[in-house]
Image (cartoon, rainbow, N blue to C red; front, top):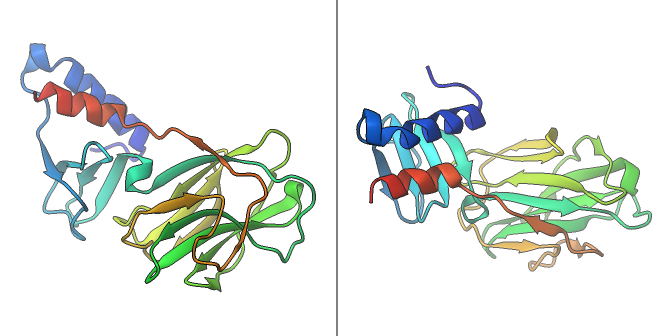
Length: 208
């Protein structure tokens, strides 16, 4: 049975790859160059692009993410709010998509009680739970992977906003501002943190 925790599954997979020389061939995988199909073509591992993401197909046709990089839609940022922002003023943290379909992850409110909102094609959704974005800044993970029918934000591992509805298929991202003109720019550009895919790298290398 697959562990529900992607990190646990990835750790187990790394062990399989590491001992492949002794116990046999490394696990097999499919590869899709540009995008995953809407429905997984069966169970097993799938690599997107040049290890942009590593997924596992499920029996119901859904995808389970094991590792997803920023190129595939998992963005990790260190976000800090300077001073006191008005509770009704939305500031762009991350924009994703193109002119036809885009969303902006926006934040509002004072630093110690900030709230995230998803603005989709100029229309703001409900605000998420209150989070503290003061001090040196917090790690904000934004999942806008087109393989899934939702957008999810966590702050230091705690869910701050979950919104049903698939993100844009175009994964073009802009940090700290909104190129579509719906939301004001964030005063301080968030710092981009790495989202590596080491398990995928090891798996692909083992097949060379």
